Length: 333
Image 1 (spheres, one colour):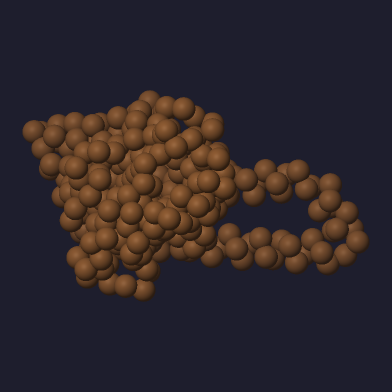
Image 2 (cartoon, helix red, strand yellow):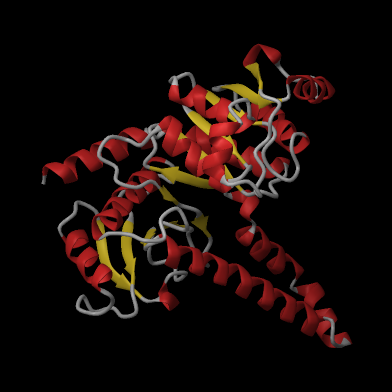
């Protein structure tokens, strides 16, 4: 297995990236790594950590695409950037999966223009794994496609099912469609048409789910358009921050609450771990002809270890192949 990693993507690059790579290589011996970025700096960081250079190769790509740049323009102009160099490796079939914490727009654009979509896939979908009180679920799309057609949502369900089977080991993932009511006749024209298509698709479709049910833990794959998905994830982040801030304030308000907080500390740690994005790695971009993992921009070394774990499962679980088979089967129907 070979992974190509953008060593200069993210707020904490390259130190956090390379530290994460070295930790992961000590933990698992079933993959090699190609690092893209400024070669001299990468070598310096690897030497500090006594890395196993027999399993690492470097592609010198000194340019960096920032989040402030227009993605399409940057991908075309910065041919020697760490993202473009990695995408070229993927397009040539020289690596199985790509990981970057860099510009989301550049990753989406580069994957679409350089690596290309799986034949039959109409639109790729960005799909983060989100926590619930029970098992996590996959939300797609969360921003790659603001405007969608019913057949896009149908394919999102197929791709999400393939991911949850291959990476999370769920035999028959439960799929739902985000709507403003549980009834099939409710919602926008997009929702009603997508419901009809999903009802005929070979996925475990459980029907519509309202916003209050999304984080219930009842569903494994939650399907919606990119605009709605992005609103859901941003609203969830904001609500979680607000609740924790309120809880922290109240727990510090008196001696009794401080004592209660001390006794409940183990429970708080468990909740914090459940909500920690570094435990999940990154958001896969599903529908591309190869594994693409978009890590959080502020990822630390721990998050990169998780992203590498995720990439290994993506490849060993045959997710790309499962998506291709599912899309091909739905087209024949």
